[in-house]
Each structure stands twice: as C-alpha cells, then as structure tokens.
Amino acid sequence: MPNFTFENQNNFTFIPTKRVNTCSFKEPIFNFSSTLKKRELLIFPAIATTIPPEIFTNICEHLSSEDLLSLTKVCRRFKEFLCSSSSSTQQIWRQARLRSLPFLKLPPPLTLDEKQYYVLSKSEMGCQFCKTSGGKIYWAFRARTCDSCLDIRTLSHDRLFIECNVPEDVLSSIPFVHRGPSRIFWTRDVTDSLKDYSSLHDDKKENWINKKRLLLNSIIEDIQRREQQALVDTLGARLDRLQGLLQEIHGHMLRDNPAVGHSFGISMPYTSRSLSPN
Image (cartoon, rainbow, N blue to C red; front, top):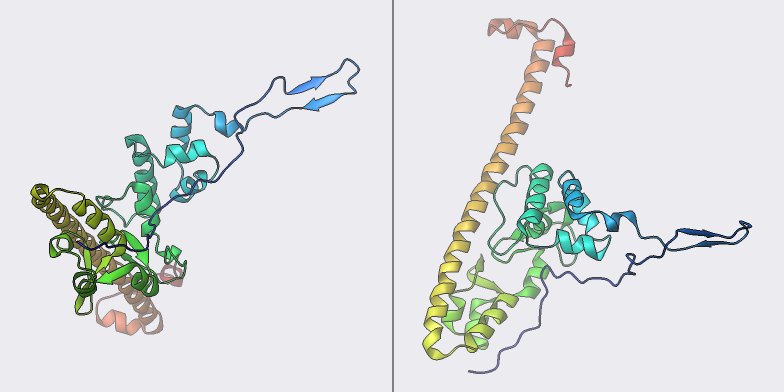
C-alpha cells in the first residue's frame, strides 16, 4: 500500500501554559524584628489553591458553565480537576450545561465529554478554528466550523479513493457528511483510521472493520436524534414567537375597536394596563 499522509489537524487540543507554582511557601507570613523596623514579606499561597477537594466540588456545583471555563484557566490544579473524566466532574458540567443551555437536553455524543459538549454547542462562539461568526455544528466531525475551515479540514470520497488510494473498507467505517453530490470526510479521522488499519494483520482487519461500522451506525443514529431535536426546538421557538405576536395583535384590536371584541364574545379588559407587556 502506498504511503498516505495528511497535515495533522488539531481538534479540542488544550495546551497547558507554564505557570509559577504558588503552593510552596514559608512561615511565618511576616517576620518582625524586635524594633519593628525590619519587615520581610514572604510568599503565601493563594487561598484558592489550598481548598479541600470536597469543598471545591461543592462550590463548582453552583457555578455556571462560563464560570467553570474561567476556573480552568486559573491554575493547573483547577484545570486537572475540571478537565478530568471522573463521574463527579462530568456531573458538575452536566448540571451547569442544563442551567446555561436548557434546550440542550440530549447527552453528549459518544466521543465528547460534558465540557467539550458545552463548548461545541455555544453558537455565539462561531467557528472554533478561525473564530468568525456563523459556524455550523457538524456532529459527525465533533466540530463547529465555517465553510472555509470545513474545506481545509475535509476531503471528498472521490479524492480519497481515487487519488489517495484509501481502501473502501476504511472509508465505509468513518463518519461523513453529505455536501452536494459527494461525501466528505474529516481529514484527521481518515488518517487515524488508516493508521490503525495499516498496522493490523490481514486476519484481523475484517474484525476491525466490523467494529468500526457498528460504531459508525451508533454515531449516525445519534446524529439523527440531534437533528430531530434541533428541528423540534426550532419549531417550538417559532411557535412561541408567533403566539406572542398574536397576543399582541389581539390586545391592540381590543383596545382600538372594542366593538370587534364584543361581536366575538370577547370583552375588553378593565384597564389598558393588562394589555401592556410585563
């Protein structure tokens, strides 16, 4: 098989920054001489970095998702806790997500944790790569991207199969998105799958493909549920706006033409204040 390489594309990669260790300190805090003329101010650790884990967990349970994101940038200790895959951490993010984004009722996709799920679902953040507005969520790729960044990070089926000689067995086990007449694949998914496929012996490749296809079917079903839920949420929001508009029109009709309301058996409210918005 010919060599097959792509430019590596990062997705949800968190690069830790180098910070000064604030957990080492000396005692006492102040060292006064007998004449109180010499004072030496020694470093004392930040109180936040010495909070017991159980207390820190209780605090996080009452914070919003944006506050939790801010805490991940405070120090390495907070980041390790809030970015871990433990059940307690995931529960904290789930509760915060339901408070911040109540319409996001479905659990995260198979390959995302609660934190990544919240960041991906924030439509106001725009494209996660170029930071421009108008990014669209592609659940198959676990990414929110604009059209330009999507073109950079995807390849069509024909190009992969004809020009790059990627086996059809590999392509049939990778998530894809229909764009126009062709299917497009996330470049990183192709490189990872092809690397795993090439490292296997011939007698194990068929079993690997079957497992990948089962996973792909689960991903497709999950995407369909999310698209249906998004459609229901959109229709519900439009219905709420339409209902509010009809109530406003109804109030103006009764105020300007009370006789119209009496003809339909609708009485005018006692005061005009009841028609005004709260």
